[in-house]
Image (cartoon, rainbow, N blue to C red):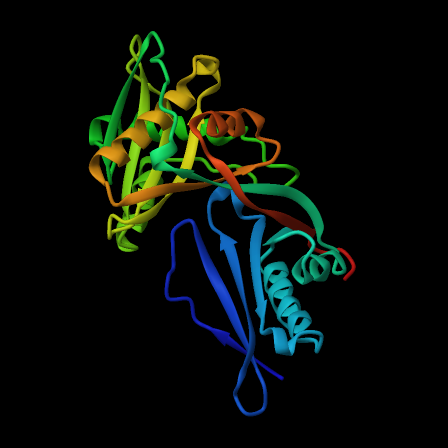
Length: 289
């Protein structure tokens, strides 16, 4: 078996990837590993690994060799934790558990059939909704970047995610990345009438074909503005806009941490139904293999 390091052709400001391909003596691929190294100041301690081995090649040490390469690279880069995601009760879950990865989070993936969406949500006094496509308007950019702090205390199990200090450049980079993938990014935000500041936001993308399923991104409400129903109001408005503008889009996908009960309740009220679950595992680097 041979490991070949691959170049990352998608360098991002927020992260970059290392990759390895495992092959046999004849050059036939056996498996691969991707290691994402987060670049934001509050996340430089963290890496994320994704290992794939062809079913016919499992239990021959391929996965172990790929994992060793990824962990060694993460350690050499000064990372203190590495996370991986897999479905529970699978070979992948058992592989990670035997190699000092501990389950730290369960993610629930849900889908909303747009024809079944429940949009009977009332507005919240003292707030108004605004929306935009792609890049945030310049007059809202600073306030929108500040509103990203709403995600800081989002329940995420025991994962050592750290914290991202958002700025205008970073929020604009998200829109640029969606555009590069050929997707359409839609944002709905709640503006506090008295201060004019953004109190919360929700984002989603739809495919460039305007068909199939769209994907929810982040949703958050700043702590001082919670308890007014803003989360459900914003998401209902985003759903309404998708149905109005993109009749070929039939559903919306999202994933939520199992312990994020408030957001799960919002999604359930809107009509999202569970499709599957996955688990995230975390290994502290420097510990015994």
